[in-house]
Image 1 (spheres, rainbow, N blue to C red):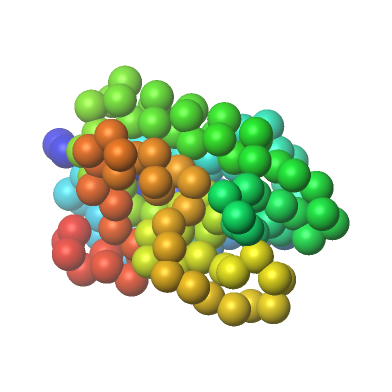
Image 2: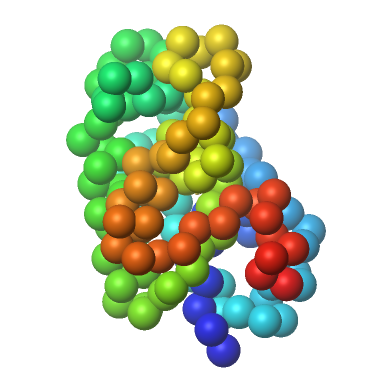
Length: 143
Ligand code: SF4
């Protein structure tokens, strides 16, 4: 069975900044076709649940309290890549809009819910290492 790296929040893990999840019912269909490898880069990077929301600005990741969490986000991205490599993963399904997992859009760093085209920190690293990243809105391409 092919392996698929997946944002842990999409399978129902309460690892979002607000302690909730982004459970997607279609994940149950994915399980029939793939061995799911769940990762939450922000937790892997040492951040807490719950935590302050963060956005990318000028190549840094800054929380809504003005704290620079770039180091934690980079560490989480590296850990997620390591897990992907160790499992010989070639594809990933990641939650769009997240400063870690986004693949079509992220927020613009002003905490005003303004979306801009772009990738999260983990998505960038995975793509640089040849892993194809899909967002949850593209799940039909994997089913
Ligand atoms: S970092 Fe990714 S997996 Fe973790 S909560 Fe955010 S979107 Fe979900």
